[in-house]
Image 1 (cartoon, rainbow, N blue to C red):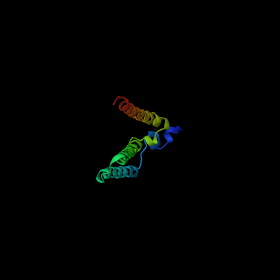
Image 2 (image 1 turned 60 degrees about the vertical axis):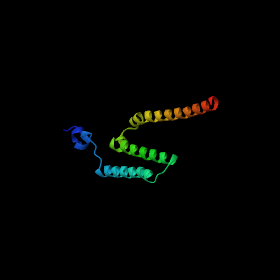
Image 3 (image 1 turned 90 degrees about the horizontal axis):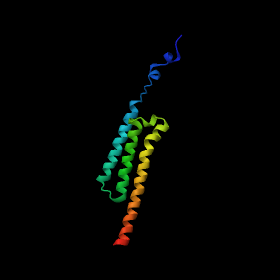
Image 4 (image 1 turned 45 degrees about the vertical axis):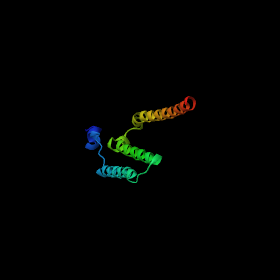
Length: 114
């Protein structure tokens, strides 16, 4: 009489999960396209807020794809994803708040000490 674990196929027994090569090729293609778009921002000489918004958007999309697929975060439990992604997000929010406060402090000093 065999145990239940011995009757399972080798792929389920080893805990090893393989993803189709098509997924990786698709992600590589998307990364190439997003990189081409970010280079096109410079090629078309976009300036100002639009330039930086597009560069940051393409950068975040590429980073998200890399983390989700190549670091296998898309297949992890939600608690682990939150534990890894929420602290950097909280730090970004705090840095943004500090930048706003720094701008306000600078303008206040320019108003009263100039």
